[in-house]
Every structure is written in structure tokens, then in C-alpha cells.
Image (cartoon, rainbow, N blue to C red):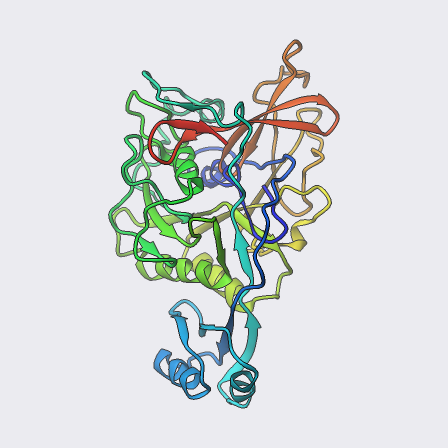
Length: 379
């Protein structure tokens, strides 16, 4: 779902991952929840000439009176605390500096408050969600074995009985990768909840999850924290077992292709390393992919949905995204189930049941997945 700034969407990234490794994917609609947003990000990203050593970057910032937050390996840039005008002026005179840009904020969606949309269950037996059945799991032999998936999100609940994340993790917003928001845990279950007789089954139950926490307990972060997470993936992808082959980012913000060259360069580095980066195309039918970051980047899989009628676009489709049908609960002739008028939209990650009784009048039933603290919930 989309917030006015950076939106994170539990139904926005992983079936698409397995366009490549399991089957097919697609994306997401609904009326977005819009949290109250804090002010502008209190920091800057300073981009240096290619080849500028990390130590030299840090020295330049200190000499200008700034303080380094992140000094990246994946790109020639540093994230710094908010610079005063004198520090900005000093860095602008530095011949090694090519750009100084604001560190733009990113936000997760609010958790639902509707009791019907947030039913919590402690299942006595395992449930296979509709979206998982659709791609053939758990009967398919394409179950994610040998594939590492980095969940770049709010963290993962390491104590959840239906998740088995790697102990190798990274947090850009504190010292722990433990989820303190819930979104990352939900996404993780959609991707790789275990096929273990309890709770739910993920799209790739044998994949190994790597926690990359870039959003805090309020579900907020910034370009800088996202870049820090991608930097960790880039540095460690081939050092962990199994290697990280997929990055899942159920997040995004309004923006343009070149509003943060360092963020795009980070994604490009992963792409060039053979790592698939899957993101939500966005949930606003009035916004195109070209207006959403990082969905606008050519190096990512940006995923959106179609209707079940003749392969036509749904009212939530964004131009430039990958399409997959929303026909999971539809008959083969494209009509939804009559008396319930419930259809299904596939998302990245996962699949969402929708009330489609009115044209573009979509009401989410939610995706059943793992819940922070144990059990399952629909988001």
C-alpha cells in the first residue's frame, strides 16, 4: 500500500521473485492507508567521484563539519547527519564531491485496525494460502531450496515457529534485526513460511531468509537506510550459505529515476552481480511506475496486476510493470465467484483476496501470513 511518502506493502513482492525461481508473479491494489508523516529526513547523501576511498570520503565530511552515518561499499557515497549551510558550502567546494542530495524519508504502511482485516489465529493445523496453492506449493519441487532471499524491511520475528531466518543479519536502524513493527515478519511468511504442519506455507518454504532491517518500529526509514541494507547484501551475498540471489523490497516512495543516483547505483550493483531485486510497482492507479522509486529503475522487477477478463489491465496497473492475472478465485471465463463476489489479486509478495463487486471498488480481505509474536494474521 502507498503512503504519501515511502510505502511498504506486505502484498507486494515475492510471487514475482519466483517468476524467476518458482513460477509467476504479479502485483497489488487497494485503497492505501496513509499514516501521519513526520518531517523531512534529517540528513544528506554526499556522492563522490568514482574511486574515492571510504577513508577520504569520511575525512572530507569531517573537515566540512559533518558527521558520517553510513560509508558505503556498494557506491561512492556517504550518508551524513543534517548538514548546516556552512558544511554544505564546504563540501560543494570539494573537488571529489559530485552531488549533495537530501536523504528522503521512507515509510511502512500502518497496520490495519479493521478487526475483520486483522484476524489473528494460532492455527492447530497448517493452512496453505490461496496464492501459494496457485503457484503449486507445497507440491511443486520448486520450493526455494538453495536460494537465499534478503528481506529488506522492518526485520523478522526470530522467535516465530513458522520462520527460520539465518542468524546472519543486518540492521541499519539499531543493533537488532528483530522485527518491532510486524510488516517484515508478514512478508517473510509470504516468502518462506515453513512447510511444517503449523500456521501457513510460504511461496518458497525451503528458501533461506536473511533479515535486513532498514525500517524502524514506526515502519519508517530513509534512502540512506535502504542503501545501507543493500550495501550489506552486496558485500555478503556470496559469503553466506545459501548465497543471496533475491532481494525483496515491499516498499517505495514517490520519486523519479534520477532523484537519488546513489540509490539507483546501489540497485545497479546488485543487478550486475546477478541478484534479482523485486519491488512493488505501487498501489495508486493515478501514479505511473516512472513516478515511483525504486519501481522506476530498469534494473528491478516491478510487479503489478491485471484483471481476469481477457488479460486486460486492472484499474491498479502501473505502466511499465510486469503483469500477472488476478484470476485465482475466478472461473476460466473470467467471472468472479457469484455469490461471494470475491476475487484474488497476486502481489509482490503473495496474493490478496478482494471484494470486486463494484468496478474498481476493491476491498481487501488480506493475505494470511505470519504475525509478529507468533501465529498468523491477515494484512
